[in-house]
Amino acid sequence: MLILGVILLVIGFLTGISILWTIGIILLIIGVILWIMGAAGHAVGGRRHYW
Image (cartoon, rainbow, N blue to C red; front, top):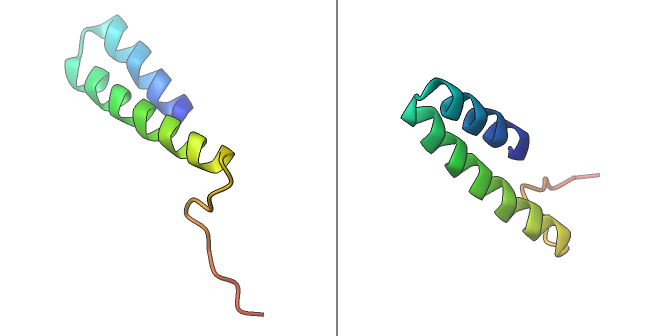
């Protein structure tokens, strides 16, 4: 999510398309939040395993 956000930011900046810029910022913020939660030890989007 972080990488996609950065890519969209760069493409939006270079081409001047503001919707790509906006989506890139949103994805970047969500990616940072998920990264921080994962680094803090929380299970982000985890699955239950029934063994």
